[in-house]
Length: 327
Image (cartoon, rainbow, N blue to C red; front, side):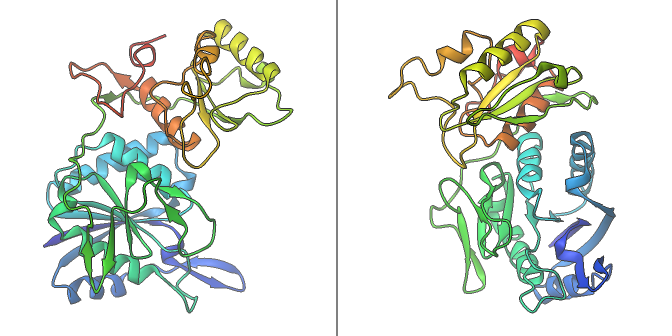
């Protein structure tokens, strides 16, 4: 099996020292790990810029790079930092047509630490890349002997080896040196039916918490807003009125999501009207259920950058029509 390993800056390549962290550019250990599993790999280093310093337009360029490599290799493994891994995984899973495995992995410890987990995670990523289930399930993230769907990944802890979780748990595990998928075959992946335009829309994330205020003067250059509300998207009344006025005046989208790690951004079962009280002011909730604020920001950016296609929206990945076809 021929695997292209795309490397961008992250803890998996770092060595800690008295002067801070430096990058180890020697990938010999990764090559030996793959050869031990009888796979041929090529390492492509995409500079020293971590994904956390990239714009979403640069993520679109990364997507195009991965797609080019997929034509010549049986699988692609992306080595990267973990701080922005959930956003990169969601972006790639949302936009790429994947008929070959795309595995994302990294490390929570630097190479100089006795508990360095990078080689183990890479070894496991190679194992998953060679599994037939990985071909049609979208971007998969392999960390700490767990396999997560890229579209469901959350970073729940900033430092622990078990930092990553998914709302329904991992879809697979590494056990006894091989990938195991307890539920068997996973649903086939489909990306959003869109083509992107090269515009770098500015979309900040605001927090709707007790006493929060919204000053529209600070957001004149924004192309849209994502607001992380309390619980099921609850916002202070003053903030809601100010956001509604900004939406009415600018005709720019305001997406309400939840600041919770999992769950929806409205609850019409226990609280009838919780959706209507926002949507009557032109704020957007549908199409962003179950997403974190980071994921909602990416989906809104994709919607604003989307060219219309003839394909119908995909259930579960529906982009609200007003955002797709212009406001």
